[in-house]
Length: 277
Length: 310
Image (tube, rainbow over all chains, first blue to last red; front, side):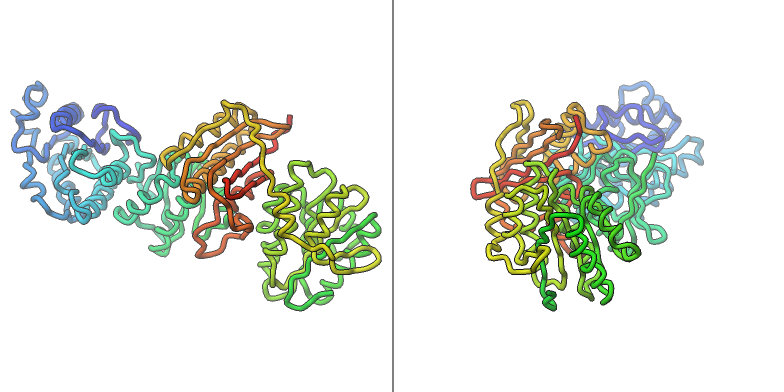
């Protein structure tokens, strides 16, 4: 079972988990990355630290020292991983990590775990939009492959809107967000939606949908929403409008009874609500 | 009586079942004879009388219990009258709508009278006849007086004539009554920004559960709180005050703000494709058992009631 929700620290994450960590100091990010990576080693994963010149920030922990000696630690400097100012190619980036994950498996590890400092990749709106799409695609990859990642963002260098979008696009994050839209834990649908959606989140939802662009299957954009606690009519209309851009019907799977009430009362077109247990 | 292409809206004053049937059975069967769709939305006991009087013809029309479909008068125009009329836009449509009966409470009545007045605006120019029966043997003099102002035509057992006191706007204004602030002090939450919406919902649903709202209606309350508070944030541009308390067998959910509702038909137009606003109050009208509104330059109060029993 993938973790979802708010994270107090970077501990306890499994082989498929995806964590967003917005930090206010480099020390904070390093400390959390160390927690995250050490547990990856305990799970038998190869670990990779992206965005540092060398492994020095990780040193001083016995497990990491041992892994450095055995070759279980990779360090990729920011300049090599993502040249500054680059707009990420989402599909390309997913292929890169898929290859690295397969290499780790081939080398006898249980998978790959990455802690990446990704701030330089989301500084401009163009970069951010592309990166959000990438975050969603890699999240889908993670859900079904032994790859887990912690994405670090310097919240002092980004505006609140950017941080809110990044937070909402991850299944787990260290910041509270009103809602989350991320890859489904078990495939079979376009995305998983949780939290609450009202006037406060409509613009964020619309912006996020445009970037991550979840796609329908067989004319249906299925959103699995077992932890959706509220959605108002405008939230439903924003979701339905996205489905309609792909000529699809929105299917919202939720246990919150209000969604079906809204659709029935307003006769919202191109929307179906399915009750889940 | 039917003036082609124009909306016809008579009040029918009746004293007995016989007078009821004498007028309404031909109204239905004449319509059916010329291929006009007919719907009847009257209280259950009236429905029984009419069904028996109509015999086989009852099978060919839409029959609705107004005490259920129209429990909240604000729901009747979009969900009963326009839903039926809009489904048959190519023909003249006949509807019998009886929204006022003796058991309507003093709390409900102002919304009923406003509803009757608003039908005139909602159907202006439409090729529809809506006849509204009034039971003279049980209704108050006030209700019968108001009907003369809310209906341009009056039908009784002897004749059909123009109302000489037709003044629907005056009725709407007359029943736009201040709603006394009756909630206890701890029943109120101030809401200032959209970020407060989850807290407003939590406040509403927590209090509603404690005060006895059935669990299956809590989602309705959450939707209503959200729509009302969001409307205040969007349109009134200032803070609003949410109150939830219990009063006379009802759960009351009220939002006060500093804005003014200027569109008398807001929340009473059915949702249409491409429409981007007006859904909020439509939803509130549909989910609530009663909606009362007071609005003016000094602010707006929307008070929603849920029946909980005692």
